[in-house]
Amino acid sequence: MKDPRIRKMAKQVIEYSVHLQPGEKVLIDIWDEAYDFAEELVGAAQEAGGQPFVNLQSLSLNRQLIMNATEESMEAWYKYENFRMEDMDAYIVVRKNHNNKTYEGIPAEKMRLYNKYYGKLHYGTRITNTKWCVLRYPNDSFAQSAGMSTQELEDFFFENCCLNYRRMNELAAPLNDLMMRTDQIAIKAPGTDLTFSIKGCCKPPACGIFNIPCGETGMPIIPESANGRISYNLPSFFQNTLFEDISLTLKDGKIVEARSNHTERMNEILDTDPNARRIGEFAMGFNPYITRPINDTLFDEKMAMTMHFTPGNDSIYNPSAIHWDIVTSHAREMGGGEIYADGVLIRKDGLFVLDELKQLNPRELKKELEAASL
Image (cartoon, rainbow, N blue to C red):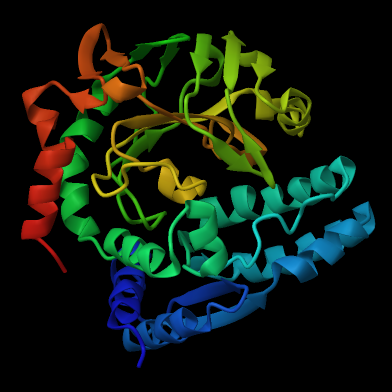
């Protein structure tokens, strides 16, 4: 018997996340055999009157393509994929990765070549021209990486992916309104003293629209405005490497020093292109059901009482082939932290302190979402 939560999630993705309309084309990009979810997405798209197209992919096959890629072959791949992407109204990707180390051992120059054209396709065309949503999918490998049994991981996954994101979006609106009025952000925490501008950058709330799970308010920054230092206290799994003890020093928007347990590899990534050393996103995470990192950025960046400060792409302010969401916790037990908007303290030790924002704190947000369950 198929898990009924799969259909519930598929309907929310089609009807809310990409709000598919009659006659619209949606590309459903399925990695590593997430077939049961693909079937439900196709069915939900057809019920909405849309035209679904399905693309089946494999990490191990993609590894082989990358290992032997040339500039000519990657340019040809990009032209083909870009032609299809430009024809789509919506895009949904579901990753059920069998092994998150599949790309281990690929030479750095091959990964740079792949990221160059992958970035052009997804950060250049997909993000700007389609309604899109990115998801994971549970399996044994995901559970092992998260430090859970497969059953625990499945329950955790569906608990987070079947939330009423329309209601969460309504509750996040006051934070977005505040960010839209804000110029200067200042962040203070152990190893962190950082300032930057978001003037005119923030957009309407988008909880559950671009990512599921969700639970963040994110925005680009004025790239050249970032100055100071930030230390991250959570691990970050990116491009097949688990980075820890990350710190960045920025001057006039550029990362001038980057350190971690893999400093050399980190700097290779930040040298992917000139804008990879600038910041593409600042966000505050507040999902009350994600309370610890599970080594998957799509979940970790939404964790309650966290923020992320992201080197790389923003399609308008800072186009780049990478987008690296590095997360840090401001929970008191993790050392705490403070976020100021134009000199006013809005969040302390991971909790919002302004009355109009307190509904996003874990206890209050849980109550609201339980009352509005799908």
